Length: 369
Image 1 (cartoon, rainbow, N blue to C red):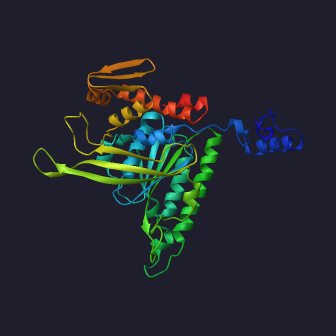
Image 2 (image 1 turned 90 degrees about the vertical axis):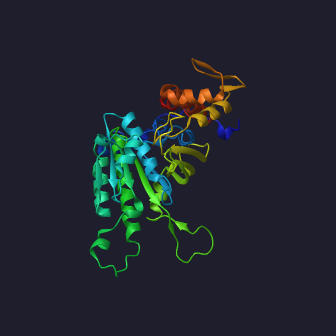
Image 3 (image 1 turned 90 degrees about the horizontal axis):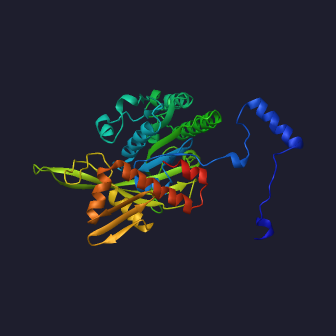
């Protein structure tokens, strides 16, 4: 190993720097100064989608800002509901909060996606300033596990609400979003010092640039502050799978979604993936509306990692203390669909294996769930 790459054992700062850092701790409180080896990989909140969880090593990071972006009907609210449902399961003693800036929260669909409606406060925000103040207050409440803001594009500055439609409002929203982001970032750091880890998820929508005839004509509302501050950004897309119901009526049977991770400050790994969400109950596959049909995808990843394989009338799934033999590949898929514990154990094992492959710390790998 070259001399410049050799690691040496260092002690905590002493002398004048040690005294200075001690004074900083005394003035600003516990947790103000930490050594770099005390800064750990944040735990994750599952997105409810295996391929995205696999790429993010478990889901969205706690105590960080994340953002889902897309066109209309892309599946942003769907993904937010999946994350909310996961937060309710992972942190039963805490509560996610939904800032409904658009005023379009759909409770029936959210419930099908797994959200416990009685455990989700909805706060409609008339103005962007209200969203900023409420968001800051919610983050400072130790019972909060997750804050979802739907959406950045709908944040309306109070001056725009109160003034005439004829008045120009250049840069108002961008400045408001910048304030929002700075307040959120400050609150996350403050809460982190008292071991209160809140995840913030922003939803945003593409807008079209006016008069642009080259390059990407799309832009994101709110300025650049949001894009710089987030740890995870993903573009969600949707392709509707239409068909006919048992009664012969045209309906939407499933949504075929895809994602592209455009920013991930936490780990390397895949940046794209696909998943399917069932929109109408499928008796043949035992799937209900709102479920993500991930079984075949999980098995394909298990095959890549060498723990699932076979052919003809013998397929074997072998990992940890589990060894299952199936007569057909279809039986393995059905077994995962019908046994949530088996599905989750395999899903977690694959993500942990990927984290180990990427050289993540062992204490983080053990916390993946």
